Image (cartoon, rainbow, N blue to C red; front, side, top):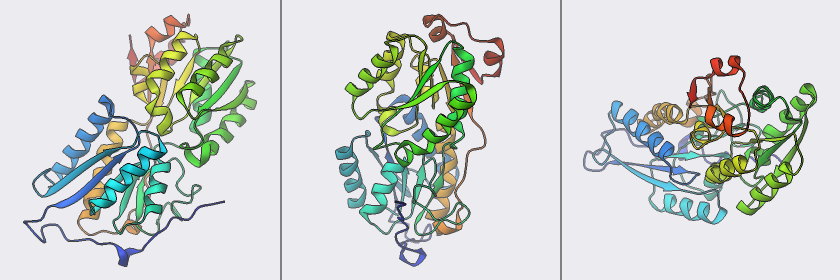
Length: 326
């Protein structure tokens, strides 16, 4: 059933004009859906720098409270409770699952989301051009990305005949359906046997990948969801140990030793989100800010990982990459 989480309207938003009370800084909450990592610390730094360029100085006229939810339901509840307790003016939140939980928890503040693949299909907003209620944001991918991931895997490892989409239905977009449907369709087009592997714990990650590696020709695609991101190191290590070629949605997987990543630049995405946060702090309403969709994706290949898998990446694939890790 489609959820409609369009809580509150423009009249319900508690917004003050910037500078209305010089002695009282505005309050911004940032809620990550992953564990702290160098990449997300860099994303936060870029976001804060972009806000400073718009006149919002941290610990001066703007208080920024950062919370981390690690893909676990209990941590998510605790982090959201902490955000509600601080009564922020605006919230920047990551992932569909955390955004939905934040909206269901209530509050009067506007919310800017990131890393929501299909906010209309998930029921978070009524439309991309003019979202309703107190929610707007930036998507991180499109459903057709699933076909691109599978294509890249076939180019890198032509011997791959069976590919699974690895995801946690409790944290993936629309319980994984956003990417699974086009992934299965792409498999039929490319002549690859495709299926899903639902994992809800680190142990299930290990078991699913071990089962895939039990016979030759296996590979996988890691879906972009908070649980997978929080276990990225484990996933990359298991792929190397089991000699499984894989494609990942973000650069940090490749930086950790993954074969290929293709997706948005997280640091740039957070930098872009500062514009909407700034406009909301200055009095705009979310309905006036259309959902932004990505226009550029970054391809990273890891040659060391390829050698470890016994693969020689096609020169055309290497030449196409935005970044080549040796």
